[in-house]
Length: 137
Image 1 (spheres, one colour):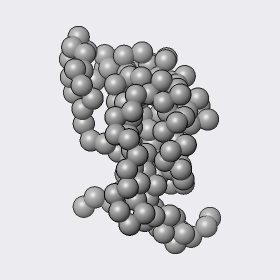
Image 2: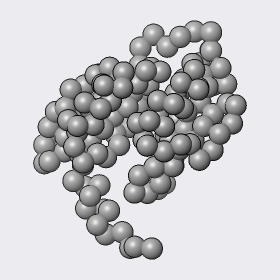
Image 3: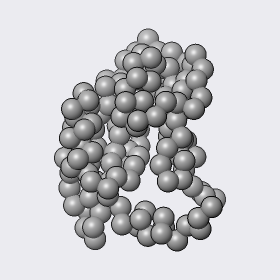
């Protein structure tokens, strides 16, 4: 039934600021721009990261700020969790979960981005194993 990640969607009160922040973090510009949302394609599998202007979200009233970070934590594979966390914090993200060893080589951490979303980073040996089996081309 579940075949793979298609889109990770975050909300932002200031879409222009979120676009600038994520463009700097990722080193790329969004491939898709609309007044309501932007989309980036990133990583080895070109996963989609969407930033939606909160006023267009049906998930919560735009007039009510989110009191705490909420939702699932999506972990993006990184080669160095400590370096990724240092960069995120230097860009204004707030540490939520410090780097920790989950066992068997899995190391994860998370931050709250400047827009109130949880952003997870993880060194994931399984990700690298699957990437190694991918047919080039």
